Length: 197
Image (cartoon, rainbow, N blue to C red; front, side, top):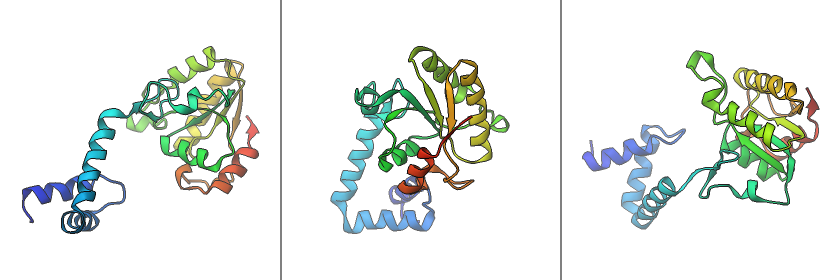
């Protein structure tokens, strides 16, 4: 409609969550009409992040280094390991300021219908970490969806068989809710009220 370059920019912006055709069009036109320096900064930042950000070798969250700052922090409790579905969940918990252990990010949840099994979400790597790292308690903080519950149950069974204490975050987090959208107070309550499985 506007020409191939502008149309491609609009289409590229639609890859962002919650951005439909109208929002993408508004963003593209704003950047081109009113904020060329912002457009150039955004392009440079996206290019830089795309080439430099990878996954932590220990917890699989996003980082610019081989290991993230959380995994390298000697002040954290290395006997606690919290299992999450996404890096966004990790950021939400970190913002609550109530948890001082380590993490393992699954990058998804079990979904046999979609062909997502234990290998696709790193469960063998998680079990290896439980075996190697002297973890005393595994906290399951997968989302409270059907798939998240099934994933937590599967991991809990494996960890219990290895002799690791397993707990699940309390249900102060709404059923069907996703951790990245839950407020810090609710997350703090969910962690403080967790129970053994």
